[in-house]
Length: 328
Length: 188
Image (cartoon, rainbow over all chains, first blue to last red; front, side, top):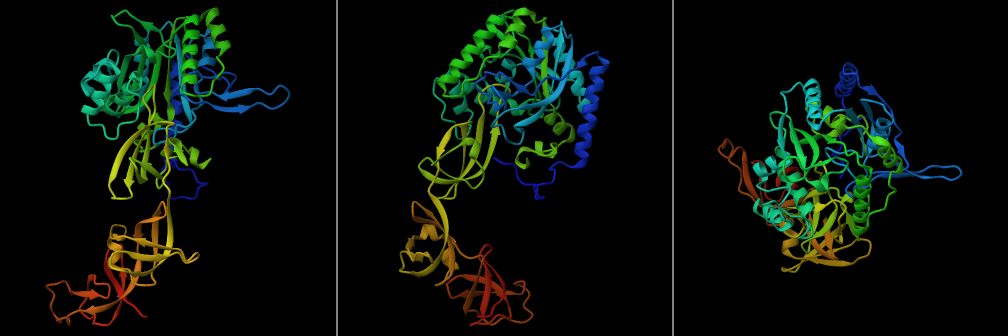
């Protein structure tokens, strides 16, 4: 799935200098944004002794040399390490770093990418959505974001209920919507059919005209977010930002219950085993930090490469990444 | 041989719905959280139709035993067109479906690119340029501009092409088989 060649010799960068200058300017803007708000810039290791358990994320692995060499992972996000800082009393923090996801290559995916992640102790999810909106307006210069629930947009664009619909009902929607060449998902794979509809029918329509902030996600996608039943059926306190159909940000009101997190990790590991995926160690340091006490907080990450792509009006990530993966 | 979705790239030959196909393009699609997919456009190598198919990321599909080999065209018996691999002298016969438009351009001893599927010719591509003799063409009328300065000429293979008015019967012409058009006069 390599990107179309730019037709230049392979040693050359794929991005124009104008795009790389824009990239540098956006990084300065972001640092200025957080400095003005008193958020501290931090750095945590790209190497990690444990990694994400989510069966839909694949980590890159390496091995540390020397006596007692350890199996290490390249982080898929700085979340676990930054939460250790939060539990140790850091207050509001942000980081701009590299994150790695194996196998994710395409127009909007490079397996090594630049991530902005920040945490705000004391913030409800809605306050963090406000801050994301401010940052997007600063960098992209567009209008304020619309805020809608996933249930609203799924109903409006796909005519389905992402929380309650059965696998059969979701599959039938995919057939009725005449999605061509349906994948061979098991008939009872509720999450799979829902993810197909969300990615193929809903997401392309989001963020048109103004950015969209979509919130209240299905509980099986809670990841490290809190689950709340305040407004009826339980939903994950998560949001995503979309601009021009591109997913740009992923935010949580953070889960603070270490025992619940351990249950979610174990459920992920069981699913990994079922699907024949490699097992990964659970991050005991994160669990210990949460047991000691993670402050009430909300956190979010933004893909910087995609942000620059949208700001530049570019077509593909290789237009804004100096050296994409097929030239390393 | 099977291929995982992360090996998909344009030109890869795979089996889909029982037919050999060539991948035209593959796009990685992933929702914010959850299952990733690879959306693929495939060209069915038997009928040329392009179809779309979505795969779960990480899924594997069977490769197609499709190879392209240069072969020499020997002769036609009316039903089949016979080709030979120059190194092994192995002979293959292509039917009219596999020949397609190539029948208009090939003559004996021409080298063609033959796509074999499970050892049987699936598609025959003529050389980009061929040299063919004009077997019939009326003399051009000078000053007749209504036809844009061209006239039809029938070639030794039976194909008809538009040629300049000065071309005469018996001349050799260079033809671009991709567009089916006259390029220039040619020497033997």
